[in-house]
Length: 524
Ligand code: ADP
Ligand code: MG
Image 1 (cartoon, rainbow, N blue to C red):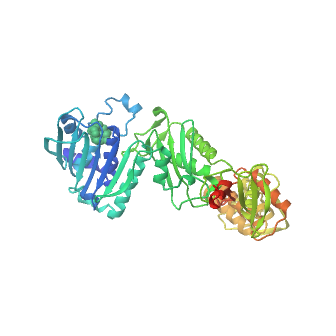
Image 2 (cartoon, rainbow, N blue to C red):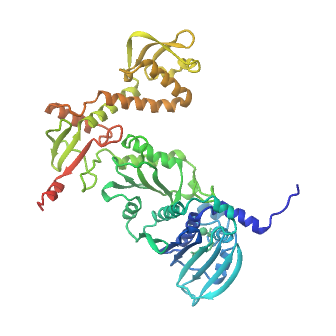
Image 3 (cartoon, rainbow, N blue to C red):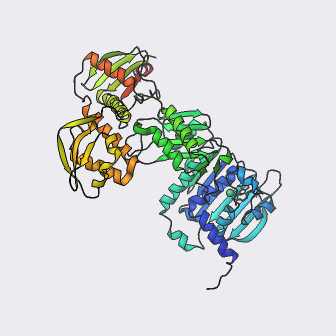
């Protein structure tokens, strides 16, 4: 085989493939350019199907005739000029290849004018070839129109989804870019119909629009270099709705996602997710964004520190005492130290009153939370969580699990076991949490977890076990309670670290404020 240098046209098609895989990528690159150009208004219009035409119009700085021609060549950029500049990138673009990549796989028209120029410029490029450059009337700013995307690379088209999903990705891309730029007016049109209109607004309003959360369901919090918007505990979604940004740039980062999810912890039901927006400011030297051609992935110098800052800010924002309100007044506090038990309703809800209004407490959920925290503390401190069995018990084990019996972790969680011949164990003590469960089955489950996931799996198993035990022993719904018992329950709940939800993430209490009652009865 002979080694050959590829023709320029092929090189550009390959490069284009790295950056532009689908219509949403075109929209991302064009809108980023508009933002870099200082636009205050950006209008994105797509046809149906999206591939036929995509245009992005802005009122940014525009380009001179020379710049417009140069901009569609590869590695031409006005944003950096030297190696040192790569260290401190402040614009969204910097590679200087987006326009060239898009132009290589479409018919592109650029219509642009700088405010100071008497007349604008029209540049036409087809499949990467410059077709025309001419004077043309244009409002100040730039409009880039991309027609017949992938007309010359039919294979690309095969990898696309149905038009509906490609458009959904376009809309998602616009939302993502719009979140941190609440100062910019974004309009997205599909087939001449407005699909999304985002006038300039406060950061809070912009986020609540895009996450589709009411003011009451969204919390805003900032501390040091972390600014966050969070769905309040008690509401959750079947899929991940977490948007993370570093210095205004959307990034995907497992570290950031994990910090948010771990801070929510048991405030969200298992398998469900919060909605969140995280805006992190960092010294550009603390990270490397030049990892991925689409610049989504990010690497932090000090992962630990970033994790901690985010985890702590989210924990503080969620804090104890965020109680859902009955339709209206936003998150509010738990009962004050001077609360009074009014009574019990339906043998299930404790009714309280304090200076601010009325609270309803779910007696089962509340007791579950109390027991969960007490048991977890006991288990973690390694104190008194083992119970001797009435009689030692022989448990059969699969041959691959038997060798794990010597693992010190077993003792830590409360098992006292020894090998018993081939493929069996003699159990003398079992964890207190397992009371009432089949000891043999539990031991096999723990050993399996140890062999597949090690330590980390064990912590999950422990927490699951504690949740089960907390639930099993808790006061049930439908149980009548004495006044003393109710007072004691509420007092202990308020001492919990996370009193507002049960360990499964459901609310323990709901507040109806005095003003809400007054509004309902028309007493204003
Ligand atoms: P990059 O954004 O990485 O610099 P692009 O290929 O996206 O590379 O754009 C090349 C250059 O074209 C930019 O550096 C900028 O100078 C100019 N440009 C592109 N889009 C616009 C726009 N909407 N308004 C003004 N200038 C633009
Ligand atoms: Mg760009």
